[in-house]
Image (cartoon, rainbow, N blue to C red; front, side):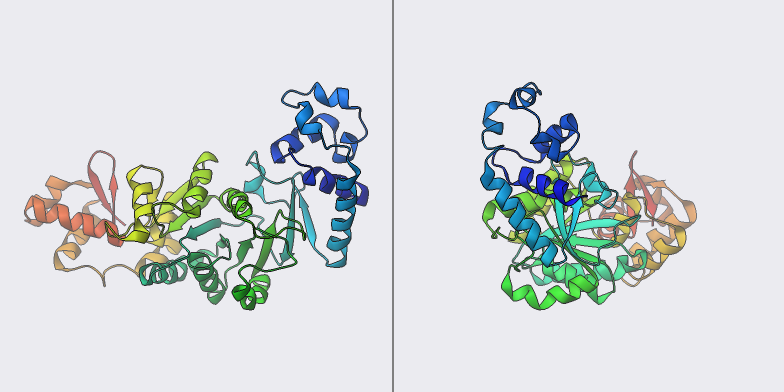
Length: 367
C-alpha cells in the first residue's frame, strides 16, 4: 500500500459514523480509500445505505491531520499495517463483514495455513479453569495450533502463558494502541508473546482501553479463528459476547462444562444448555469436531488422557465398544452384563472424560 493510500485509509477509519461496514462499501464503490475523498458528495449519497449523517465529517481536515500523525507513529515504530484486501490479512477475519479495514501488528505472527483457535473466559479464573488450560494446551500442542486471546487477566493470560510454555504461537488482541499495554501487570509477558506470535489491534496510538473498545476487540478474537472456546464464565460477561459474535460468523463455539451452581461455570453451562456451544471436556473433542484429526496425531492426544482415568466398569464398556464399534445403550448393558442405570451413568462419565462420544440414534462409540 502506498503512503497516500495508507493515509487515506487511516483517515477513513477515524471518521465518526463510518464504521468498517460503511468504509468497505465506500471503498468498493470508489475503488480505493483515496478515491473516496476525490469524488463529489452527491455521488456518494447515491450509494445504498449512505446518508448525509455518515458523510457529515468526511471532508473535515481534522481527520486528515490525525491520519498523517498516526502514519508518522506507525513508520517511526516499525508497525506493520494489514489492509483488509491484502493477502497477509488474516484469512478467517476477511469473511467477517464488520472486520476492521486496517489492523496494526507487532511481533512474529504467521497465520497462513495454520489451525487457529480463540480462547476466552472469566478474569477471575479458578483452579478448575487453570487446570483445564494447562491440560488442554498440553494435549493440543502436537497439532501446533495458533492460540488467540485478549491478553487480559484470568483465562486469557493463563492460556497464553501455557501456549508459550509449549512453544505454540499465540496472539494477543488488544483494546488499545500498540504504544501501551493493558493491564500494565502483563507488560512482563509482552516480549515472550512477541517472540512466539505477537499483538494485533485496530486501535491507534491515541486510543485508550475504554470499555467499548473491549467489546469491539471481541469481534476480532471471534473472527480471526475457526473456533472459539469459553473456559469459565459467570452468567454475564465479555466472553459470552465473544461466543455470540462467533456464532453470528458461523464459527464453531465450545464451552467447558462445570458443576451446577458454580459461579464461573454458569455461563458455559448455559451456552451448552442453549445449544450455542459444543461441550468441551478434552482436546480430543475439539480435534474430532473440527475434523483436525489424523489417526496418529489424535492418538497422541488421546493416549495422555484415557485408560488411567477409567474405573473397572468404564474400562469394560470401553473395551467392548472398541471391539464392537457403535452400539446402543441396551446392547451395551446386555453384552457387558450390567444394569441399564449403571451403564447409562458410566457412559455419561466416560463422555465427560473424553473416552466415548454419543452419536445420533442413541448410539455410542469409543474414541
